[in-house]
Structure formats: C-alpha cells, structure tokens
Image 1 (cartoon, rainbow, N blue to C red):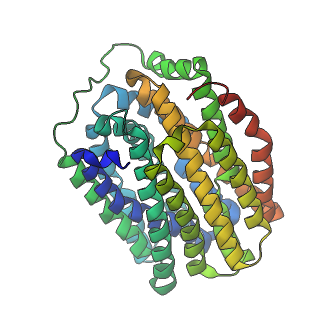
Image 2 (cartoon, one colour; image 1 turned 90 degrees about the vertical axis):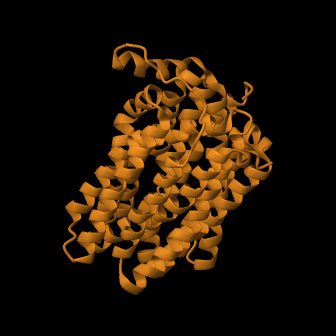
Length: 398
C-alpha cells in the first residue's frame, strides 16, 4: 500500500507533478473557454483540441523512439522546460487583449508537439523510479494527483475566469512547470537503465513497438479498447463547455465545477487503486467499470438539472480513471523494458492521439444536433464497439 512513496525520486517527481498538473488543468479550462469567447462555435472549440492532440496522433512513435534512445529524465527536463513558452505566450496575448483565434491554434499545436515527446518518456519513466513491484501504486498515485488537480484546477480557473478573465490561468500554468523541472533536477541515483543504442533505421525501430503490440493479444486489444473510449467517450473539453453555456446555463464558474466534479470522481477512483493496487490487474472489474462509464455519460446527456449533471460526471470520472489506469498497468507489466517507450507511445496515441478525431466529430455533431445528442451518440457507439474487445482481453492473464 502506497509502496511507491518509499522511493525518494518518485516522491520528488510526484511533488513536481502536483504543482504542474494543477496549472495544466487551469489552462485546460481557459483555452477552450477563450476559443469559445472568440468564436462562439462548438466546432471551432473542438478544432483547438484537435490541433493540440494531432502531433501525438501522428508523431508519438517518434517520441517513443526518443524515450528508448535517451535517458528519460533528460527528455523530461527538455519537454517540461519547453511547456512554459506556449502558456506564457497565451498569457501575454490574452492579458493585452491581442489574442485571436489563430493564435490559440498555434499555442495548441506547440503544446501538442512538445507532448509527443513528453508523454511516452513520462509514462515509461515511472518503472525506473519505483520498479515493477510498485508500478501499479505509482500509476494510481499519479492518477490521484492528475485527478486531484482536476478538482482544484478547473474550480479555481472557473472562479478566476468569472472574476478577472482567462489570462491568470495561462500565467499559473506557465509558472507551475518550474516545480516539475526543479523536481527532476533534484533526483539522484536513478537505476542504470541502458538506453537503446542500436544503429537501426528509424522506421525499423518504430515498427518493433507496433510488432510487439500486434503479437501480444492482450496489449493489442487493450490499446484498441482505450482508443475507442478516447475517440467517443472522452470529449469533455469539447462538449462540457457547450453544456455549461447552452444547456445548463451555468457560465464559466459552473463549467469549472462541472469539470471539478468529474475530476473529484476520478480522484476517488485513483485513490481506490492506490490503496488497493490489486484491483489494477483485474480485467473483469475493468469491463464492468467500462459499462458504468457509458451509463454515466448517458445520464449526463439527458440531465437538465445541474446537481444531477454533477453526479453523472462524478461517476463518469471514477469509471474513466479506473479503466485507464488498469489498462496502463496491464500494458506496462506485459511489455519488456527495451520496448516500453515505444509501446507507451502507442498507448499515448490510443489515449491522447485520437483526441483530434474525437474532438472534431463531437464538435461537428454538437454544431449540427446539439451537445446532448453528440454525447449520447458517442456513448452508444462506445458501448457497441468496446465490450467485445474487453471480453477478449479477459481470456488471457494480465
């Protein structure tokens, strides 16, 4: 229980992530809200998120190769430092009243380009800090931080946006990365994991990760299931601003609390896994929470009562993190060390990279049919496509 905290380097890493992730969530509320203010279009809000995640979809395997080729802490020092630039640029532009929609798109693209190197390195760095025995606990604690920040960040951002506007959210995110950089610099005595130095062609090295995922059926099926949920059930940053503005009529502060409610549910789910890590390797439980997740999204879609909407998002958040963390643990446990960066790059593509397509389809459906119909369609498609994959992954041990 909480065994990952025995490791000094992981404690440093987690501390830096607590600060930087709160800032990231503040920006995750401010950016789509700024896009909505500038355009009043659900489709264009979805386009911002699509632009942000497209680099991960197209180039994450390059990030995986870099993670396997160089020391992961070095990669993370570079990426966490670079993240400061687009968020500070958005602060300066929005504070001076010069922000335009195309500038938001450029900042989103820059953030996404950095992410394609950051995500595979960060995901595969965990096992170097804590070892295989404490990996599930580290994943769950990371998820707890991510989703605890998802409660604090959006709630604070909603209040700030309502009171003074979006610029301070971007500034807070820019400054927060300094904590992550400081934590990485303070680490000592990391395991001597030998980076890959094979002089193979780049495409051949990329293909090795994909070949492993295709030969290991559980890994492949889990990646497909994660991609389906990401594509159709994780479009909250596209649709929830529209629910807050056009369906529930609760404004920026209400939007922040809707996001915070989902984050609180995810925090409870992550803490459940942190204190009972054995649940993170249970495929049957993963299947059941997937079905509950779809049901919660359907409840939120039809609700016109703010309190019920908050409850629906709380349950959806709990199920989402339980599903994703379990998939992460099962995939990393099965993957050999020398391929982990590239396989986690595939995981990043499945979880984050398909976001552009998901954001665009959700934004387009919301523009044509309305946000509630867009979410209902996504939930139904998810329910139809994913259970068979999950059942088949249960046929083999994790």
